[in-house]
Image (cartoon, rainbow, N blue to C red):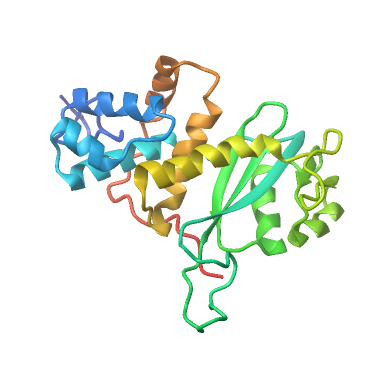
Length: 259
């Protein structure tokens, strides 16, 4: 523990990190970090609670603070090259993915959350985010945030919202009704990411509030992008991100606005 000569406030090596202000031993924190880095399907807060004798609230908050360290660097550069884009509908038991009204009995149907994922074909890097809808303007804004449109080639399925993007960058379409691969045109790079995300959300977490979905997506994105290194290297990569990521209240700031 040290004291600042100017402001006279005490501080330690944990100040300003995801461990700051926690009464949970640092040893326990590191054990949980190792588990979340090594487990492909994720670790639920209930499992952390049972294994390390914590309260449910402490285990849940600990897991979300670690997910803050797993988030992509906001200063990361734009992707350039061949980019594969696809969207997935997460959550709910609705029979219709995009509708909100059940035509048979006119009852409200839960709206699914939409996750857009971009995968760089050459490096395999994935970037995902929750979006409020799949309208053309929304997809364009998401692409502009992560893709260098002057130096990239886009590959998508036949979703109509992607069609007008041909005016912005080269765009190849694979029509899944009749084909899955046409030469080098396909969206298969993204399937392994969807498989792990869906398996984790359903099998490990069972239920994820839509407002926190972005945090869980960041967790799977981090493990996907570090899949070529071993667990100890992934653990060290996460520890390099613990500073400056402190969020006293891990809330629903990432929730997508309703369409």
